[in-house]
Image (cartoon, rainbow over all chains, first blue to last red; front, side, top):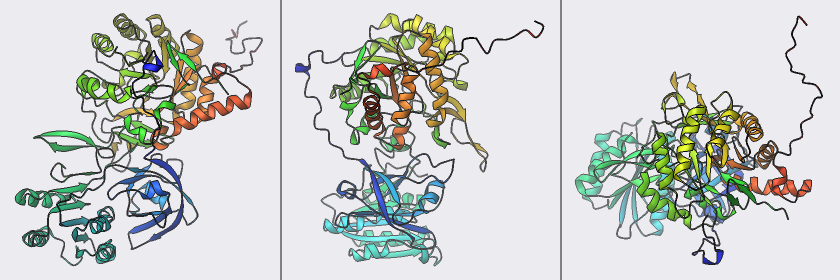
Length: 282
Length: 315
């Protein structure tokens, strides 16, 4: 037994502070923003709206039948608005969790647990960053628009999508003062060779103190290669199936290159934002 | 004011609610004050460095989950330097879960973790994810006896034996653990199980089979808790699909002296606290002064004749 004499107990943890909580939120809107993606907005209290760019909420999707969903679904925040008291997410209906989420109507309840995970960080020496994203990864990167602006850092956002109809976050970056370059498969502008020319141009213009990316294996590999060639640091937000979201269950581990070897890290706890060069493509 | 204290195999707990091993780690302190828990049962440690099993390691099942995490372990230096100091900050008793591939390995590991700051050792002789086809010490009477007896000789700390539900007669295994020196039983670990993705025609876990937990298994484990509590004189800790206070009370009425809350914490991180508060509310409502009054309070109508007796048709 520990501490047989309570008076001798060495500085026990007192005044426990809660930094993540389960919030019973009200859905304000849940609408399609384009042919593939939905935008859900819910009320949130100050702890919830304190979520940082790249962090996530673990979302309890409504039951869509006897087979689940049982687990929560992690979703990175698209926008947190402390003044309005809201948080918003962009999602694509792909499985039982998001299918159930899409059935929610204004006035329905949504259980959010968070904020969780390690988000993006900006180093004081950076003046201009390049944000490169694709698909639903654009939602994860969007909060960087305001975070960089608030820190006086210039942003070039290279946004990739299958077609202009499913392009997201361009207005958001533009409104925050970023230079926006939109590329799409439909227009034949999103190929890796062309993107590499665009990125090399940005590097030559001194606009790439750091890279930020999410949503594409191909883009990750390209940025890793350019990062190594020019010594440019970077961060990548990764996805993985999760159960607990708090680093307890070890189901969301991925392999990372660390100190010449391979290390296993938990995406929910050590990430979901990781060092660009340590990430291993999937 | 209800007296919520319980004593489990030599360990005095402030209340009967604690986490199940594998569903608890320091990260939960973002959402839960560990000082409110009856005990802190940490994820199983092994002496061997283990990276864990192939992905995917979990999948959803109706009212439950299937896991084959495989106990990733950073070994003993990490336990001494990181794990123990992390939990030393709390006054709540620390229960260290251990596992090993051999009887000798179990015994020497038990000795090594018998340290100041450790209140009890939970011996995980029942993990279905460590050996081929879910084999484990607790699957058989003789291997249970050998493992528990060997561990008993090497530590004076209270020993909680975590039993396997993958057996025909769990009470028999419980009696063997008690006879070999266990101070309490934890009933039970996960059920060896399997799920198949019919589109990819592949197993839904990387290691093919895994352990089933969650509300889906609760009635089976309540039955096992009842059988074990009747068979042994040491306390039984109920563990299996507890999601609410009602579930925990069900276990206690069936004979559990305390409960472990596991899978639900992945869905509702503060579930242990609501279970604890709900048990106390129930005691107040039903006029119990002590939570221990619930233990085994199940009332079973006894028939005056054995109605399931075999009757010889020729008689």
